[in-house]
Image (cartoon, rainbow, N blue to C red; front, side):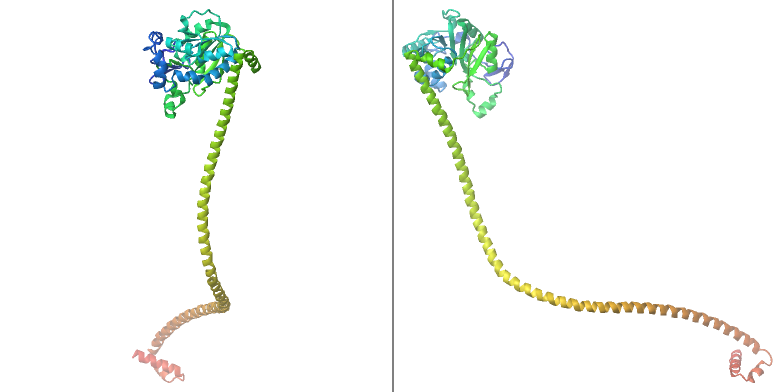
Length: 455
């Protein structure tokens, strides 16, 4: 293994067991099995032998065993497949189901009027289906069966394509067995190319169930499966809803343009036979069941939404109650503050009256102070004028004093000069006599002073 069906050997790493083909978009098993290993020669020991349907399905995969599935598959997946088959081919088309398991779908197709048969790898399973449902089932592989080429209208492969070791060869052989307008009706796991293994593990994605490397050899994407059949000349492909759409894809493919039957054609074909009527009744019951399931899901979704609303409203109510309690405490606190405020208001009223009286007195004092200020201002103004006048007087007296000092100095100098002159005069003969007999008293006093000074 490790080689894609398209021939590409360079695979991208996806997980320890799978590689991803970047050429076509297929997930390829790195383990796988050869065609020889997949054939059933010994039903007790070979992989797809008896134990695969009894122990492996239930013990290893957790699925119901073949006995339970022979009952349960009829009421769900078989009816889903039949409805899709009727869309493309009406009874009594010739249909072969490849990998029919217990054969319940073959039985349902025959009930609806199809010429249907099945193929399985295990002789034990073939015998089981023949016994339980009384339908024709052959031991495969299909390549070993004697089927006339171009004789089949439909080949159905439900959860088989992913198991094929050589899907190109097997699908090419199937197309040869179909009529020119025959169809392949296929259900297989759908690998989505944007998938990431780590993310699948972390989110527990549903596709993890399909990663069974010893069984699922090729997990196709819608792109890669389209490429496979285009390569084989079957260019017309139509994808339809899968019963397990969370991880499967379901499609019809043909070499010719696909023709679709309208509901009236389907009803007419089934109502034409008694067995067909029973098949139609089962389909009708399935539709009612699906409708009830849709309504139940809507109801559950609505109930979940309402429950979410109830939880939200309950939480809001709790918050409201808490808020109301907090507001009650605030109201009580404010009430106490208001009561205290009323008591304080009386005291504040008295304080206001006292302050008002003080303010009135202050206004009276301010008026008196204003008068005093005006008086002092006038006095200051007069003082300024008086100071200016005294300054002028001081300047005038200072000038006069300077003039007096200058005049005094000049007179002193004159006196000194006169003294000098008098001394000289006093020294002359007869001057003393003149002085003594002078009629001017001032001259005599002066002469005396000069004379005394000289002596």
